Amino acid sequence: MTTLTKTTITPTWSTSKIQEETARAIASNCLAAHQATSKAGEQVLNDYQTIARKFKVAHLKSLGVTNALELAKALAEMEVNLFGSKIDVSGDEKAATLTYNQCAMWEAIKKLNPMTPEQEQQMGAGFQNCMQSLAQELGLNATVKFENDNTCAISFARP
Image (cartoon, rainbow, N blue to C red):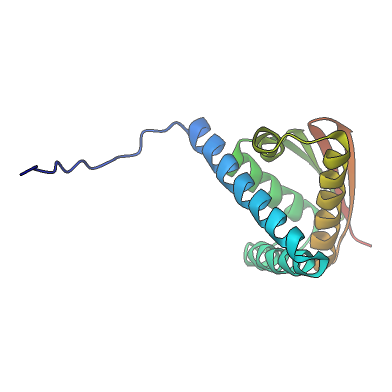
């Protein structure tokens, strides 16, 4: 008869390891959801994005986000803490900019799913649409500007 040995696993990962694994896990779920919903048709993909955005907007509202600077800070804090992205925020309540100097989620997605330049442009367009729709639900406008492979600025402002 074999005697089983019980081992209690305790947390040992560094913050950077946790962020890397979180980015990888979320990126793999996003890619899987996108691929599956795309196969089901454009309407299913749109429904999925609308539902996901609804949860994100509800969370942002629960944090008390009501203006451009609060939105930029809330999004940046989540990305930096969860994934390890490098982000700067500037502006005020009326107009604020979130600048990705390094996007850990984009890096994780590219590691999991190498893309053609055309596919990268499509992903960028999807991100831009996502940010514009998110901002609109919070009464703001969003403008997304991609500067190079890993730098992106999102400007939020009251209409």
